[in-house]
Length: 450
Image (cartoon, rainbow, N blue to C red; front, side):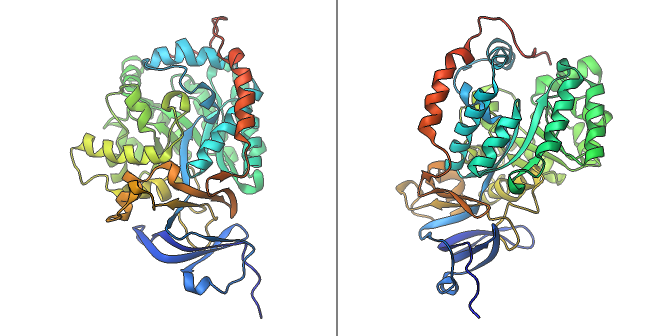
């Protein structure tokens, strides 16, 4: 009996693999068989020659990786790329970003999300964790463009109970959306903008509805020091006393995590993960970085992220991967940490776990959703290849991604975007920028007072 055709077969590539001990390896001259959006098998290319398929991709000279995951960003903020440069954190928020964000309309958010998704697809990002406003518009863009996303409607306590209620309503309404490609979270902004009562209520809602929480906490050392001086507890201890660490929580940044916070995180009842966005920390001249090694020793996954393009200027997770490895070497004084293989583990399985998708994506293996990118290593900047992990982490660039696939659907083939019309988005967004950037009203959506 002739087998039914697979949806997609990718042949003649090198496939990044994880063994039973989660060590990184590579299968040479391999083929990936995809059926109904799921990886059915990773086999030798010769075995796949006679298998029927609706679509085939010859990927010779390319490496197949699990799609990258941007574990913390504010996708629509690409509209603010470069408008608040060379400023310390407080001025960045209070003088530029929060006044501009008071002008945001749902259309601005939609266009920003479209441009961001185009950038991420071209950079090999197949899933992103977003924390922003007017998230119905972002969910609609995700459904249309074919990406996977973990979405939360952000809120401040200054919005009253309505902000928290909107965050819950969004999470419940869109959970499982886009054919299962959308997962959701409750999204309080941070302990310095959301009071203990709201955080406690959020934790109760998370437990009641089985939702995770995504928020900023201990973003930098100043926040930790200010919290200790004012309240006698660190931001991480605030999460503990309000019950948030009894839920599954994704903490953005954490460069202010102190030694006293480590046992608190280790003893958390829920699943704790941290997202690191190193480029922004360098731009803001923060004195410390995410304590990746200490978190690793506790078994806490650290996912790679970019934050929003208003602070990072790009949504390039490749750059985050390389910078994380380099900054860890510098901050620990140990060139053996992080290795390239460890960096790839952060970019794949650990990032998947950070956004609650550790059993769904993050590796190319039977039963996983077919979120796959094909990376071309034939360019002069990636040759010769003496050490493939090092080539991927320290030599390859986001522009080397040739093809991006989510759920078995090709979103970019040979650098051609198939689901987003970028010139149209850029044109319409450009027409709206004067109104969006106007700060003459003197308003801001919030005050930055850590």
